[in-house]
Length: 355
Image 1 (tube, rainbow, N blue to C red):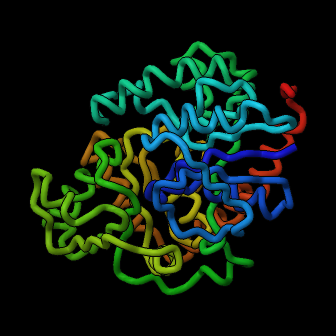
Image 2 (spheres, rainbow, N blue to C red):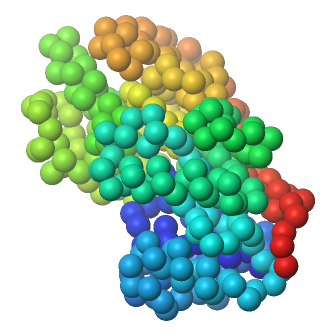
């Protein structure tokens, strides 16, 4: 059987959803599965570490939406013994032999977080796709429940396949990550409203915390220029940061701060756990699913709650912090891309496919 992967994600910036798709693709290739990544021939793709023979450029519609809907379906029309794997929320309406991965229900929970066109497209497409796809995959038990509730889909049809840290954040032993921390805290994410970074800016603007530093990775400086608060001098923004640079920041940071209001998973959480970076994070269901007891939680709608959590961390002894690091490192080993790819492959092999 050939697994054709919808490679539209390779024309996009490699953020959380696209990262999941890339890492699953790479893990399937390493398992020596017959994988072909279908990519639009008319668009530039991200530079990636995949063998050239895996990539399959397709000519066709010059609109990426029509390419995804019509060109892929036309290409697969007369194929036998295959499945189409869609790892980034959207598939084609014209093929039933597909696995659809839906990462979260953000577009339903709060549509104003997105453009009108994006929200309407997702609201139109996803309910139809879940009826068409043979298998539905998601990234957490929390998202599984959200999908079942919002789309009236049986939970029995949904399989959870977790995210994981990539190789840059994986260490052989905890001794490699217990090191002297530097004098800064870390936020990894975008300026998207649900990431709630303005709460962190308010915290580090308080006079009592002006001697603490926050390093922000992933958000663009120009986005900060468009928001309605002043950036304090103790907050530093890195527009671009590759995985090896980010891995170094995790190792050196006192802790990861994540005030997200809503997530389907939260890749920075497992990256931090694997890299010896303690967690001060939102008290939301999915973060508790990932981190368990290994984090200090706070209400993402309350500056006072965040302040109390921050002070709780600052009051911990070095021995207590080391214990947290060791415990989280052990837990992080539950999340690997190889394990996730094998679970996906097992699902594919057990399912009933047409042709």
